[in-house]
Length: 295
Image (cartoon, rainbow, N blue to C red; front, side, top):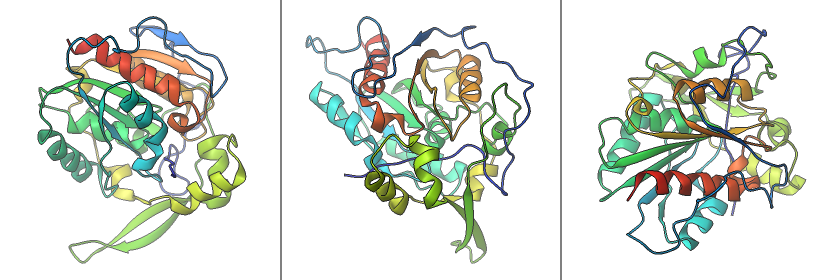
């Protein structure tokens, strides 16, 4: 099965992460654990991460993918969670606009009974930040190399922040598409020749990386420019994984967003599509959030 994910700086379309002004201290207001480098053996979380002793029923884990990807990118994590007794759902993220995408996922969540652990990767983090607002069943938010916007932020404004260690602009290629109202919209795809570097840090065999690039779903420019609402992380406990080798979202920007959300934070050596290359520490973090919030 295939998988992939998304963005940070949008070449020629949104602001580029430049400069070296914002130095982020990721330890303030967030607990940080540093993990090792092996994609198959690393365990980013200390102590209890699995509720396999069979106490009460486990919550439903909802996995929301980002742009230039689809839900199958969660396959290695979903398999592990299901093996550990969790019900897992991975709905499609429309990628047509932050407001409408969040409404779609919010409606999806309302149809789930019982407690929910809501997980977002990349652009999916911005979606869950808005979709979870006002839903008492969402017990924890988990951000995996993801955007965690505050009220009034857009992906463009976050990407435009100056960080200590900026990354190159993501090579996004614009194209047009017809909107339902008859107007013409702009959507973005990653240059297939650059996909492996941006999303995978060239960690996978070329044939797998090429499949990811071929199957990527485009992101509407509206998703980049629309402003975020009141963040769900202001009232729901959050966890955050920083991908230390991320070439799509600057790791310093990830640390800043995690700190601002007062998230329990771990750092793992891995690329942007870290839930595929490093599925075990991602699974561990989700299960840690479950154990801490659902009793």
